[in-house]
Amino acid sequence: MAAMLACVTWSSTASAACVWTDLVNANTRAAVVNRTAPRVHFVQDSGPGCPGASAACQLRAYVVAGDVVLAGPARNGYTCAGLQGPRGTSTIEWLPTAALTMAPPAAQTPSDWTGHWYAPEQDIVIKATGGGMLSVTGDATWGMSAWRAEHGSVHVGTLNGVTRPVGGVLSFTEGDDRTMPYTSGDEFNCKIRMIRRGPYLLVRDNDNCGGANVSFSGFYVRQRPVSAKRVAP
Image 1: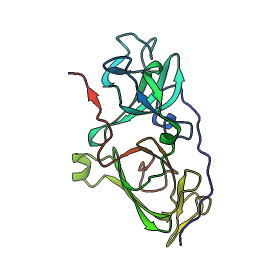
Image 2: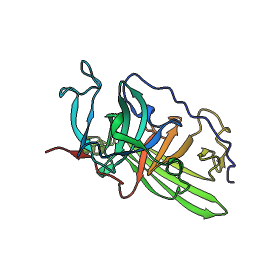
Image 3: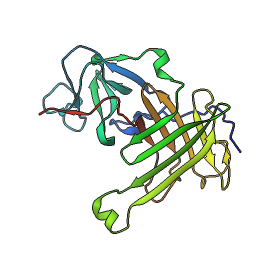
């Protein structure tokens, strides 16, 4: 039984540092790197005076004009930004606010959901099933390494539902044998919410969609990443 969703509110509390929760919320916007410089390096916030223009703050990872990032809260001329790169790797650090131009309104809430979406240890497949409904399946792991895989200690999770987007939000609760509205069920059910920003799929769950430490929360790109993480030689 397909769930009819109600529009939901996402938490948007910003942290002092730049972390994924600053980017996976309703206030996040898609931004395009402008042509203020040939390349713009990410900067960290862990050192004295950081984020800042000091060489000590600068990281090797950088973006170039035309790259699309997620833009979160700003501080002292820097914006918390996220970029999904090749092989599911991601960078979440600060970029100079002046180097970013917000994408047009139409790019902030794309209506196309279907595709195979990737994050570092998660993937989600969204397919159209007719009548405006979408099937959502996914797999996630925690601790995926050669050693943990050999010893059988990789934790896993799955996702399965059929629903439709309402108000720019795709959300549902997994029931025992059916998909339920997001507001149904209890804390032991897997609950998930998704929104679109630019080329990204932003996902939050209730940390109950798999084994210990497994989560689908994060930001995803389609099977072919829109922009590779670049590291200076």
